[in-house]
Image (cartoon, rainbow, N blue to C red):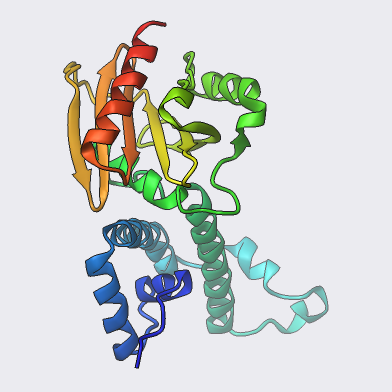
Length: 261
């Protein structure tokens, strides 16, 4: 019998530990043969641990008086519930806040470094690529039809002028871009796509970690190839699931364009 395909819901349930053993084994086999999915799952797991570090200590704190008062309806304040009930109510409230924070993080932060960790430039770029490039409905925040506004917005947020390279002669057209949170500040991501639907992303960061090395370097994160380099105030990383040779050809064109500004 052919196994059921692994869905996005299965991956989230795997991270949350909610799968039965048989289905968990199916997901683990899928992750072993799909490095991109494994990279995304790892990012979600890191995010979950960061949220636990953030919210777990709060559960042991005394319930603030303002929360005690808010937990009791005005008509019932003359006969207040016992403190354990208030603690449960506060715990539910914190759980809801944690859930909302997790969902916000799923859309805005899962592609970047989680709290307490500072992955390298190519790893940050690869995670961002793995998270957003498969997105069909909203891969970017601002589309290529508003390129001028996109570049202006990203430049203002990064505090420096950024550019979206022209890659049409290489078969890749700009899809658009988005703003991402980095370890210490905002990061820009530009996304491109060829006629066959293959996507690549350019990650632009001002976080150089004091590294003065401007050499052109290659890294492989999961199933994603990354070429990265330092140029002036920026760190750049070009990521895609294409071959190393093809990505090197595009990366060289990007480097040449950005170096001429």
